[in-house]
Image 1 (cartoon, rainbow, N blue to C red):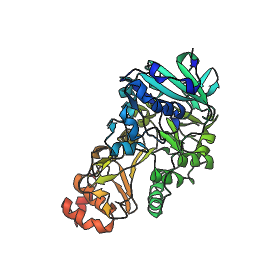
Image 2 (spheres, helix red, strand yellow):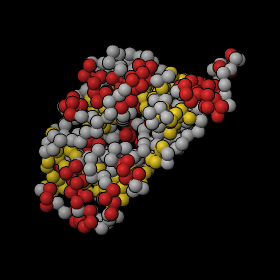
Image 3 (cartoon, rainbow, N blue to C red):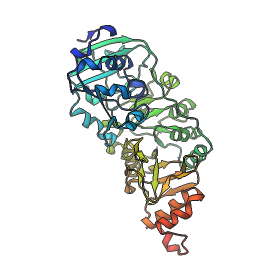
Image 4 (cartoon, one colour):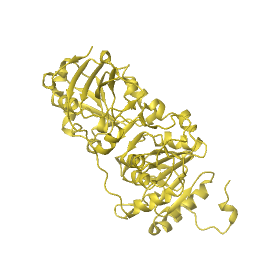
Length: 426
């Protein structure tokens, strides 16, 4: 049975061993009262490791690295400052395998839970990599937050599985995307032309994927099977565009691992039987994804080279992104009946000074060219499926901003072809 504490009487030095790996939920799922108290007491523990996921709060800070070694799969949100300071250890793993990596060494798991109901506590806004860690952690410390929405989840955690418990009543953190501009609107419009009624959507996090989602409000009977539900997907649910009526598995229910949005999304999901959170074991399973008809995966990138290789991790030597779940979803969409694997990105960065369609990647290959389908910029769509390398080069040059096309053609040694057979699909 859980020991119930007042927060100010919680002594982490008696709970966490030096060198231990402490894991907690990301974004709005971070148990902020616990993590802030943990950082305040970090010196008394004697040094430990913390897996932080995508951080939207103030607990992940360079000054805390005097006693904490931070580990993450990404450099998003507050993690970016850690990465820039060389204080973040990045796990370059596919999201589908993240829980396996963490499960090998997790010692303490800290959770934000919703109030007790139906015989147990809910994982509230995140199931994803947390659920598989529950039976593996030596110690579970839980914050039951009165403002955490009660959501439908494929597991519940019972009081006898919790070692230490505190009660709080506080808002959840929320990261706001910058407003989309004309470029994002143009890309979203192009993608919308390819998405059919009845498509099952996976949409990544960020301004551009969110803008693409909102462009689909006129579709009918859309479904959701995604790593996360963003404000954009929540908008589609509210508009009635999402019914999940044509899904064979989990018909009538939107499936995701994480709620990644503001108060409106949390209110929408609270006690809503048509939204269900599941672990990455299910949401990112290739076998599951490949069986979803019209599965449409929409993810962003930092840059794409002329053969279709995608860098979603680093720019100018700085780690800013993640391997994440993009390749899991893109491969699933490529195998799914009538599936669409889509990468979206503006053609330029830095106010138009830098091309994001490049001859050679500046960072690692996050998604290999064999797993890429459609690439979309404001200048067009290149469907690379079935194309040779030379054919891909020609199509990708057309996606670049006009000011960069001539240089890209020279670097790739490709130019306009007059032979029709050169453009034929293999």
